[in-house]
Image 1 (cartoon, rainbow, N blue to C red):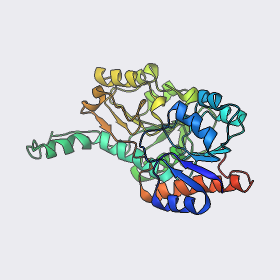
Image 2: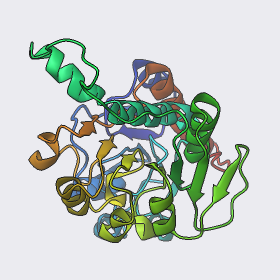
Image 3: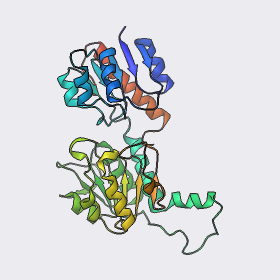
Image 4: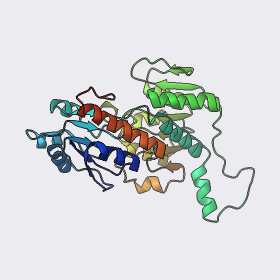
Length: 318
């Protein structure tokens, strides 16, 4: 029976399935594998089910070189920037992810952040919980009206298109987007040629691109400076897509009005400067945090491992 390392606690249904088919080692720590631990895992297990925070970088593969036992890294999550796919391929290790299963749940969190940031929901709840609410007033807690506002989506993949669908059909929002290549969309949408032009055209920016590689710090000081002072920025992609100090500076200077974030550059660390800002909504990476979604992600990852064990192509190979 093939040995399988599951690097983080996944839903019980996934654990039960895995144990019926593999010799499972379940790692219960909430902290991702370090580079050295990842190298040791590559040497020790036939298959690994990793997730965000596990450091399967080029150095980990180099450290395990010549003794790699692992044949597949079936990532739990659509984003796999914590895995060096090029180094994995060179080492003969197949890599898969879990697209589709996360699309709607992540898009829903995008809408949550749009609404919460624009309508100052986080700030309002803190006022009520602190017993500081003085009652309704014509000018109290004025936020940004969402319906009809222009939304700009950075990265028009599955999640970007799902956000566009919700914005257009749910809130009557004109949709604009920036994508490195030409993209056809099901929702009426206008593709903008440059990132800065998009940022300056719309009222709300939602980032949905994959993390890592050329997308690291795609949202930098120049891009943020192009936004309207009334602009709202939302990130549901990966933390490293945004230059976090540049975002903090823009918020502090009033270059933009507010931000809604589900991901962070060095998560779980969130800078205190962000945590104390009232015009920022902060979520603890809730994008896929629904039991049905997480079970579907785990099963998809396990299906890829099953395919590998049977000598078949990985259904969700990257």
